[in-house]
Length: 274
Image (cartoon, rainbow, N blue to C red):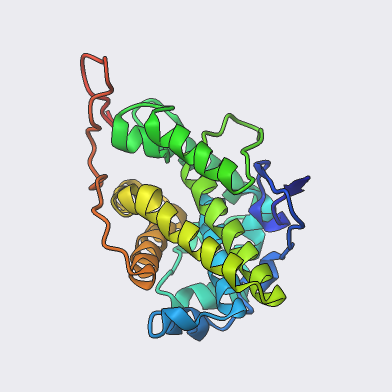
C-alpha cells in the first residue's frame, strides 16, 4: 500500500507503508499547544499520543524544507499569522525576505537558494553519506535503506533522485514511526509501542544524531535567505531537544565542516562552498 505524505509536505517523495497511514494537514501542525512539546523533556517516559503527534508534525515541518525546493502550499501555510506566531514562540523569526514577496516570487527565490545551498557544484547536499563519508550512496545510505525495510518502508521516486539517507527522508521516517506509535497507543498495544520507541532511539543513534546538528550549523552560517537560516537554527535546536528527550549522548561527527572526509578511493576530499 503506497501512502502519500500530507499535502503540506509539497513534495513528491513517498514512503510505502504496509499499514493504514494517518493523514494530517498543515493546520494541525500549529494547533498542538507548544507547551506539550516542551514538557516532554520533563517526563519523557510519560509521553502521550498527543505529544507524539506534536513531535511528528515538527519532524515533517523540518523535512519539508530540505527534501526539495519548498512548494507553494507549504510556504503559504508557513506564512499564516498563526504559523508565524507559533514559530516565533520557538525563536524562529523570518525576515522581510520571507514575509513580503508574492507567493510566486518567494517560491522562485527559495528554489534558487535551495539549488545554491544543496544541489549545485560546491554546495553541501543534505545527505548523510556525503557529510560523513565524502560521497553519495556510501554505507549510511544502505544502512538507512535496510532500517526502513525492517519497518516496512521504502523510498519511492520524486521529481528528483532522492537517496535513502537524505535529511528530509530520515526526518519523514521518524515522523512515520511516531504516527505508528500513536496507533499502537490507541490500540493499547504496549509491546509494539515500546518496540517502535526503541527503533526511533536506535535510528537517532545510528543516523540523525551523528550528523544533523553540525550540518544544521553549517546551513545556518551559509544561508543567504532567512527561511533557510531560521529553519536550520530550528533543526539544530530540535535535534538537541530530541537527543536529550531520548536520553542519547551521540557524538556529532559532521561538525559543520566545509571540507568533507575523503571518499574511499578518491585522491582528494570534496570541498563544500568551493
